[in-house]
Amino acid sequence: MEKPRIILLGAPGSGKGTRAVALCEVLGIPQIATGDLFRKNLKEMTEIGKIAKGYIDRGELVPDEVTAAMLKDRLAQPDAKNGFVLDGFPRSVKQAEILDKLLAESGEKITSVIYIKVDDEEIVSRLTGRMICSKCQAPYHVRDHKPAKDGVCDKCGGELIVRDDDKPETIRKRLKVFHDVTFPLVEFYSARGLLAEIKSETSARGINADMKDLSKKLGFIA
Ligand code: AP5
Image (cartoon, rainbow, N blue to C red):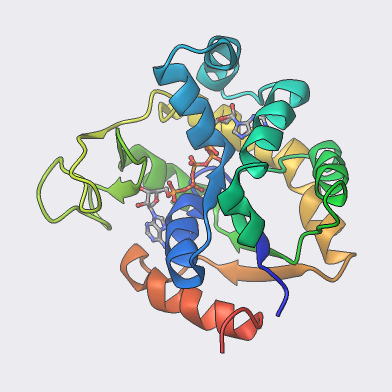
């Protein structure tokens, strides 16, 4: 069976992170989220973090050379050799081409692309209620996906916080970038026969079962 090398594609707030966590649990492979990697760099005030900060605060994409170098390092870690779920990369056709080249260096390629389709109004409502864990970055929601204990992550006990880029004006800018620059990837991967589209109607609570069904359908588990 081919190792699952999966891309989760979708607008900001469409639920990529939520689904990635569930999918990685089902398949026993790591989630590689460029947004999470940037936030870790920001927290540790690394060179990458310093460069990325302004772009992230404005809701713009961080330049490709910075993002691709960070991704290359992460893909070279031993745990990525058994497959991975990419969440937040690629975000443009140019980045998809960079990814193809990176994977080809070790004879690998993407096996599936899951596109999560959600209306913009739903996205705004989700992002304005989002909280994330300050330690492991797992996402929660004040209405639809509450932690068992207020303000505390169910998975690692970390403190829940609101992301700086979840302000209404930054959300609008991130959505525009998605429609202008990222959405063409739907056609790009569809033309390669790799795209599976899901509508994000299931509430966050039903996602684990959803991801198990999808993994079976894609042939990654029996
Ligand atoms: P990143 O962190 O990747 O942000 P994003 O793509 O904008 O996506 P989000 O993390 O906001 O949302 P999500 O789709 O993961 O949704 P979630 O599961 O949290 O990137 C941040 C920034 O970093 C970018 O703006 C850019 O500057 C930079 N960057 C990152 N990658 C880059 C790249 N490749 N190139 C250049 N720059 C890059 O869900 C959202 C909320 O909804 C949660 O509260 C959740 O609980 C809730 N929810 C989820 N599913 C459901 C459901 N089915 N029903 C109800 N509620 C739900």
